[in-house]
Length: 222
Image (cartoon, rainbow, N blue to C red; front, side, top):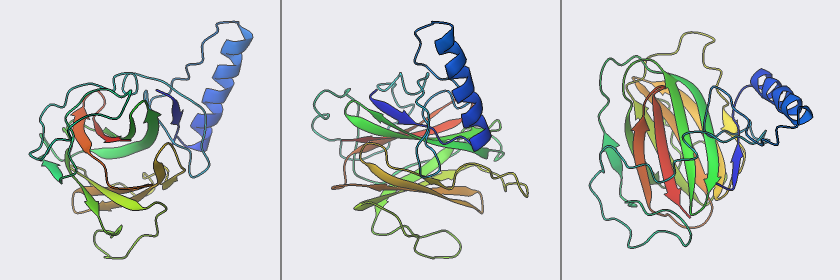
């Protein structure tokens, strides 16, 4: 992994920064900053503290189930080998539709960029991820202005309606790697929608879920 930006709320970022200063003063030599995100992050459009964790340190973790598609012929130079495709990828959620979005993070890795959606709840997230011409919001049908040359639309299923005032994840994340911008548009009829704007051309990606806590992970090759 080369660089990670955190998307935690300001209070969490301040706490992590304070903890990092304390560790440095103690002479631990560690550059690892852990939060409940425990993998990658992004600061509401301005970037934040670096972090490393179990998600970001397992770039080649296999997908529980590959979606049908045409795998790319080879990974990016220096990157891990994993099956990836430019075709739309979908999967159904498992368990009760009780997921609540808690955090969105973006990380830059050797050979790929990663977007992580973290949830509370017991279900396993489903997904629909595809390259689209524009960032069109569910429900309203409005086109969301988004930086970047290409739009990757990420729709997580199995999510419950957020309680009033509970949706505190960052709405916009700043640039990281080939990710120009990420916007969280919210919830609509069981689906949480996120748009990721990428520089350059459409490229192969993979999607998979992780547990404890439930997470939806999208890796996009450089």
